[in-house]
Image 1 (tube, rainbow, N blue to C red):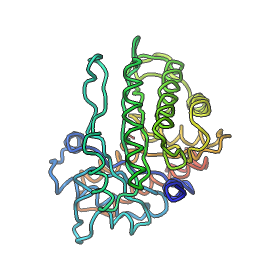
Image 2 (cartoon, rainbow, N blue to C red):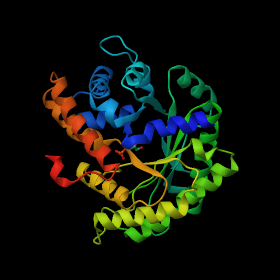
Image 3 (spheres, rainbow, N blue to C red):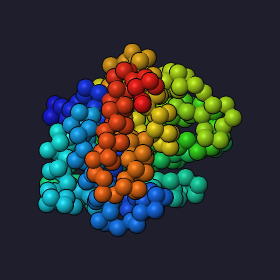
Length: 335
Ligand code: 13P
């Protein structure tokens, strides 16, 4: 088990964070089309290879979450993608769930699928070089949601997933994402997120998952996107810490937040304040998708040949978040 604990610490130690580049083909197609780039396997690889070979990787990125297509791809220089990531001093990881589907019995909610055949798929990914994995459960907040059914069934799936991943000697990222969508208050987000995370750990413990070899990937505590009562970054940090202190067992080595639709600056600023106020022993870092890639994607879409220019944009964002993961970021150093 100390081996899994070491991997978790290598991924998140010293201000390092995770690049979540595991968008499914459908999601990546949306992202590419939003900047007028055609989505095909070659373009998806081209953008991702540009990020994975950038200088910021060795200093800032401890792990990269890949999608099934990408972990099997080879770069323009004929290097296997997991090998490229390892050569940059980072760990390759893989998304192993097969997506969130309508939850029978509660048609407005989702249950994440992918447990059937998972043990075999994990062995294949391990052979391809994966050192850690991701599974995302998704929850919405409204008057009656998340329902007990959604909280319970997603926690059960996350725990069965995590147990299988550790059996295969990889670190499971457990991601229960309470979405920002809606007009709920930050207080509602705090209560619901705490309930969801507690239930996840109850199930992880029941399924004999070693908590020292787990990374939690939660949302920050925010008011809903349609709420008229937005809260300050300082309040976000305080409520997020309150939530995690009361719901995460102390054995868990690290927490890596998702960005969930926050802007790049917002997610950096909030992470920075969380670290400035953090009095727990948990490492608090990032596992960002959009908040690490948005500006780089925009730049790249207009300058596809300009690898260095794209990497410069990405390196900056990675550096800002790595500073934030140590509570050392400030607005002034953004420019
Ligand atoms: P975002 O940071 O864009 O929310 O993506 C993180 C992720 O991996 C969601 O599953």
